[in-house]
Image (cartoon, rainbow, N blue to C red; front, top):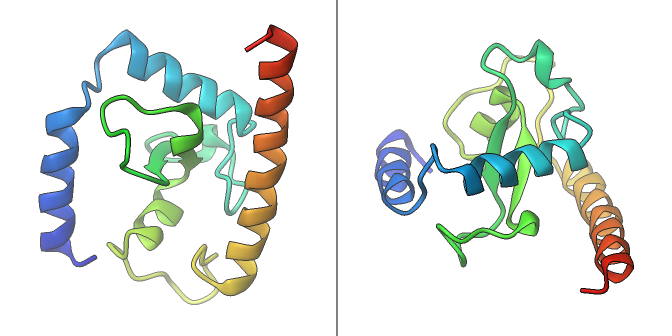
Length: 124
């Protein structure tokens, strides 16, 4: 996604999601807790990120009505790399590598088991 694509994407997204809503804030906070308040790719703690952790969508199927499984917590560098908005510096972690994607897939499987267990304990 080049910069112009990102701008269009961002405008479309903002049209559907109220960043100020209690629902969005609670969902984002719950996801960050689930992710250990760290970037799910590089593991960087949110408190060390210049602008805190960001939220990255895995799917836009429920845009504006997201489920906890639709989003993840990422640092700004990994978020920019995932959306091809930035060039990484030599040696900087790249979440797009096959190895990183494989670790991420394993992580998602683990988190989905945690969520399934929580749901079954609540009787959902």
